Length: 322
Image: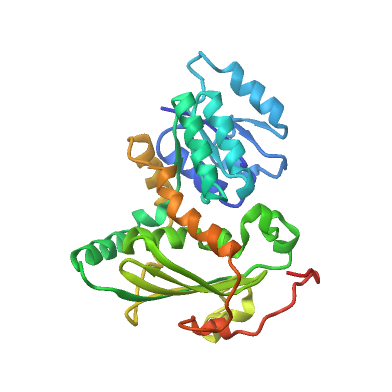
């Protein structure tokens, strides 16, 4: 049984981590979040110590050093821009770290964290759960067995967000990394894992609520459209009362992987605890992609672009200039 601490326990993704810690037979000893709406802890570890101040959380964990209750793993579920700092904290506490994606916002941050890993002798593992999905594993095997084939991929992901999004850290590109990072980084990782390194990266459209572009990989040509705007949902999705649409087509055929997501965080934890987790070096390619997308000048509707890139641009709901 390993001892866990979690930073950002009030966040959206934290329940998946609490569930994974519980289902892998481990225990949560301490949790921190600046907000106190964390009743979810009662469903998993009601006995865990909880703090709303980083200093007291740190003091508690530091006092456990050298005891059987010493923290073995720090799980990081905080806003994207804090992942670097909180991962460093975990390493210097003397623990290994499990960090949600994106592990950092910029490629050079990975270099810095790797240096701290070397200094402390501890490791950071990131959650790349799509690599564990059976359908994704099967597609990768198929692609690897077709050595000379180049595939045509269309990726569409629309996950509706209300105006709250723009008032939160997620709506601040400097904190979240923008739409491509916030909702797309795991897809870019999956595509690179299956189809190889990026050879060309073009952005057609980029705004506060969408990004569309073209990626050329070693074994694929990818057109993508990512959006948080419900106006972009297909009519049949709206009629069904749904607010999310996910589609990946491979050479014109739909790649079905909509099921089987619920246990992937637990499987990620099992692999990490068994010494088979994904080190932060595995996240580098996807971090490079989203960093480049964020800093590129969109070329407009030129070349091979995703059909949904033609959707009319909408003003920022708060009137901010993008």
